[in-house]
Length: 247
Image (cartoon, rainbow, N blue to C red; front, top):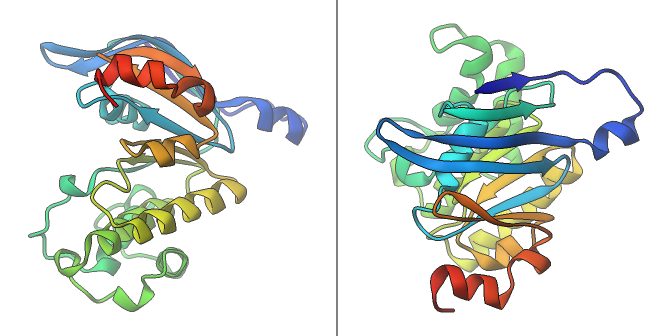
């Protein structure tokens, strides 16, 4: 098993932008006594949105965890070609409502990777947090408790935490699940803007509308790759019917 974070040799911008942001070959991963991913080989294109699609239990969250470095692959090769570690935004349910955290404190946690949880934040750290809050339109909620927010507001706070990490790779686990249409559209528009600003986005999603709006798609089934490519080619009626047995 091999994991590499590789800074590319300087080359023309156009060449680098064509290179994949992440490449994995024969990737296997899972949990003690429970393998989940089996021999996955695919690429995550740079400066694009990639949707991970598949039924519950297909391995979407496990793949995100492996890409984020939270889950260590058991075999295969995983190559990151960016300069920065990825920013990982878990599902809303993974962050407890009962934690006594304000929105600002939640976003500030995104700076811990650079600063450490017990060191005082610098002026630049605070400016980065303010910029992330403003980017998500939640600056006026900074003093509110995270558990008091609506689902859409809470999800924006978690994405702001990801942005505060200042990574060029943003990994999102079901960012729009349970949100109303307006909140889903707002987050979808934000992700499009982030890609235009130089961020590679990977999101696990059950939202076929969001998946079809992505630049690329990986279709998973039982921890194996059932399809990859442009969503229009991957998310066909036949492929979806085979995976879910019904539309």
